[in-house]
Structures are given as C-alpha cells and as structure tokens.
Image (tube, rainbow, N blue to C red):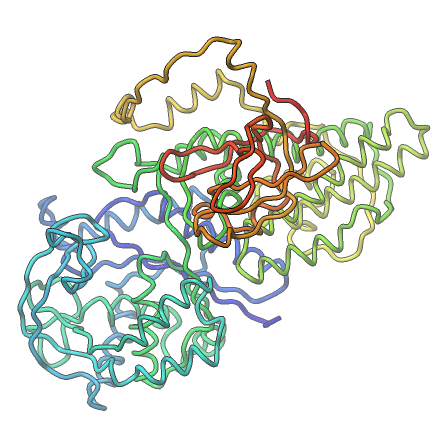
Length: 623
C-alpha cells in the first residue's frame, strides 16, 4: 500500500445550485479519503468549482449580475452543502483564483512553445450545456444533444488547437501498460475503442465570450475549459515542483461521472503527455443517479433532491449509507425516497442499531475485557480493505454486514440473558469487540454513527479513528443505550416525504392509471416465498438476462431466468434475499428453463429488487 493517497472530485459548474449528483460524488470521495486516513496514509481530498465559460456567463446575465459576483454567490452554496454533509476536504479550488490561473498559463505557454498549440478555424455543432462540439453522427435526430436533449447550434470561429492527434499512440501505450488506469473495466474499454478510432486535434480557445483566462499574447481569445478546468488537479497542489505536488501527484485518483469520461481519460492525459507531466494513477468513473426513473433536472421539480433536507431529519449517515450501499460504484442508480427508508429500517435499524442497543442493554453497565475471536472479524477486515482499495464501497459494506449478521446470530444462538454471569460476560465481550470492529470499519461511511457507537460502548472517542488491529476488547463501562437509528414507521415516513419533496413537486409526478382490481381469492393463489440467490451468471443468448440459482427452502436449488442485467452485476446478486413467485408455471426462456419469477420494481427497465426490511429464512411464505 502506498504511503499517500490523493483523491479529487470534478470541479462543479457554478451555473446552478448543487444537487444530489454533486453530493454523491463528493460523499464517495470523502468516504474513500476517510478510509485511507484510517489506514495511516497521508491523504489529500480536493474539490472545488469550475467558474469560467459560456454557461456561467449566460447564468449571470440571466440573473442580471456580473459573472464574478454570480460565481462568488454560487460557490458559497457548494461550500455550505459540504459543511452540512460533513465533507472533510483538504482544499477547495476555484478556477478564478490566481494560483490556478498561474498554472493554466504556464501549461499553455509550454504547449505553445513546443508547437503543440496552433491557430486555426473551427466549425461544428456546439452544445452550450456540454460546452462541447459534436459530429452529426453523435447527435440525436433533429440535431439534439444526447446529454442535454436540447438543440445544438452551428458555430464557426477562429480557435487555437491542441495537437491531440500527435499523442494518440503514446496514450494507447499508457493504457496497455496500466490496465487499471481507468475503472471500471467497461469504461476503460469504451475509451480505448474511442482512441483507436483516431484522435483529432482539439479546439482549446473561444472568442465568442469573455469570461475566462485570456490566451497569453492574444487577449481576444479565452483559454477553454479543457486546459482551464482540468488543470485544477495540478494547480491546487501548486504545480510541478511545488512541495504538495511532489508529495501527492504520483498518487492521484480522479473520481468523475461517466458523462465527463472522455475529457478526463483522453483530453487531459494527452495534455499531460505533451507537457511531459506524469499522468494520474487512476481515473474512476461512476454512473448517474435518476430520481424515480427521471434524469435530474431543475425543470422537473420531483427530481430536485435536496440532500440537506434529508440529513436534517436523519443525520448524514443515513444518506451516506444509502448512496454508497445501494449501487456498485460505476453503475447507475435510481433514487427513491422509500428505498432510502427501507435501507434505514432494514440494515441500519434492524441489523446494526439493534445489535448495539441490545448488547449494551444486557451488559448492565459493565463489559469485561477479552472476547473470543469466533465471528470472523479479521477475514471481514481483509475483505473490506481489499474492496475499498479497489474502489468498491457497496461491496465493502456488504462484506462488513457479514460481521453485523454474525454478531446478531451469535447472540441468538448463545442467548446471553439466560447464561450465568461469567458466561454471559464472555459472550457480551465477544459481541462488544465485534461492535468495536464494526465501528472502526464503517467509520469512513458512517462517521457520526461510529463515534456514537464508541461513546455508547464507553470507549474514548480518539480510539475510534484508526483501522482495527488485534481482536481484544479492552473492557469498558458502557453509557446508556440509545437507539442509533430509530425505526421509521409509516406515519413518520409520510411526514418525512412531505418535508423532503419540494413544495412544487408534490402532486407533480406523473399519475398512473390504477390496475384492474382482483379479489382476495385470486391474490391468495400467488405463492410468494423468501429466496436466497446462491449463484448468478449471464444468459448465453440474451444480454439483459441472468440465470440464477436460488434457495427457496425446498432442499434443492431452483433455476430462475431474470432480466436483471441492466441493474445489477452477477456478483452483486449472490447472497441477496429476494421475493420469489414460487408457483409460477415453469417456462423456457431463450432456451433455458425458468422455475419462478423474482419480484422487482420498474416497468421497461428494472430499477430495484423487491426488498425485505429484515432477514428471513429461505422458504418463508410472504403474505
């Protein structure tokens, strides 16, 4: 493991207020940074704002204020949100700062002096929202931007160009030598295919607006976003030769959304190769969040999720856990408030909260030192570390919950409340040590809850900052047991949803025609059972289908064909408890026998599996 870790978020446009997508990226980066700090690595987390360009100038004009004033005001909204979400960033870079401009100009001059920037003329289809040119083949019918779903405009202007085509071969060689340069693998393959299709020189200046850094010796041109914004990852460290740069740049990890993958995985490394500056270690691309199946948009009130409204009611940890646990990093997710509450009730209240509450309650003010290592803690620790090192927080949490479940099962098996005092003390010490480990391992994702767990155990808060080592409970006098995650009943859920939805969004979602009514006799003919997925593999003849092996408590596995490939990876399904339609007539689907149906949410595409809010054994009937 490296001694240092440097992680960056994209710098966010200040043309509009921060939303769920910004929060997700920054929370992921914060959790990874906290993990590496806990492992003893010197860590640096950078975030910031991209304040130049046409979109910002347009937004300022629409408000009737100068661009700089608009940027200053919007920046405070981002900073306030990160403070409210307890983001522990080490720096916040603004592209309007002199320290940034200095490095941008130095990079431009270096490229220009060696002939890698030249003056020419550009004409093409331009999207203001993307601040990018498109070919007609890349556009949707009617010359519509594929990202913003808005018409593009024909733009012709004099422009400076970067000789990106010159670095096509060196970039491909870098990809071949560094297979983990871009994660996940599907994104890497996408970019390698794009590069092999041939790189063209890149337009890197604009003359149709004035809000930006002037081109050296030609103030009629503004340095465009590719050189301006992307350079923030280096300028925040002071640029090549600066102490921070030398310390952290060799360990740089860029965390980005998949919509900006080409800019970071092609344009930026080509510029670095041209300048002779080292490339970042890794670029990790995550997917998009939709809200109830709709793309986040300020014009659709129901999609405007305000993270601070949720955290005001649940604290930060409930939102952090949901966002990091619900989807594997790299995949797309659908944000549904009811799913957030279901995760809260099932994983946090029933599993973790109940474990802590009843352990402290049975301790009666005293937890003895010691505790047997019978719950597999070290193996879980190794697995969690491996997955977090591999940028897989969702699977790391899934692995950690194996220890949570093992501790709960241990209590159920031993029934310490029935044991004589010495045996009860030994059992509770084992569980208390498991809780201490769980607190340390979950702290990157649930920092506030980890501190509260330590406090309830009666341990000093400063002991809860580093990764767990030996399995040996130190002994303590627990504080009064208080619910970590109070269960949310239906009435409370209705109150929360009323507060979280924007006022203008209430009733704004599309209405759905009620389904045709059936009587109770018809419903009771459907046999729903709890089933455990034990194996998942791709269907050999259908991309969207998986072939699952499930345990429905029948003494033999069932085979079920399910259309889950667009929402889940095979490895993310194994170990999940699902709801099975057990008496569905077997059918052959694309040549493979299917003996049931898995219930899931979604119409044209699956957005989530139907979930249980607590564990139940395979075969248990659902009614």
